[in-house]
Length: 132
Ligand SMILES: [Zn+2]
Image (cartoon, rainbow, N blue to C red; front, side, top):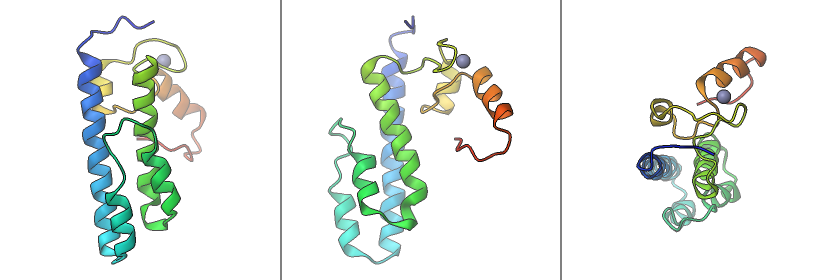
């Protein structure tokens, strides 16, 4: 279990919420540019602060190529939020060590500590792994 400083998780949780809103704003911009009013309204109805994990799902349901690149990030944020809920947030999924607060501040959706991430990038040097 992580012996993380208690104030860090709420701080990072807020960062994730902010990030999610930013990404959704970006999605809205894209959709407005596409002049597809029905999609703009759809995205406008997605609850960003309902605390569930439906945002990525809702976006995926729109199934629009122009927002594809945002969807992965929304999913990463959703996943990070559920890790906060189940208590595994900020713990490296490979070595189970705490991910440093500095790293989480830079990448709140990080699933691995820096060492494991670098190791992984070395292993998958072909470069087709998504990264933040
Ligand atoms: Zn690690």
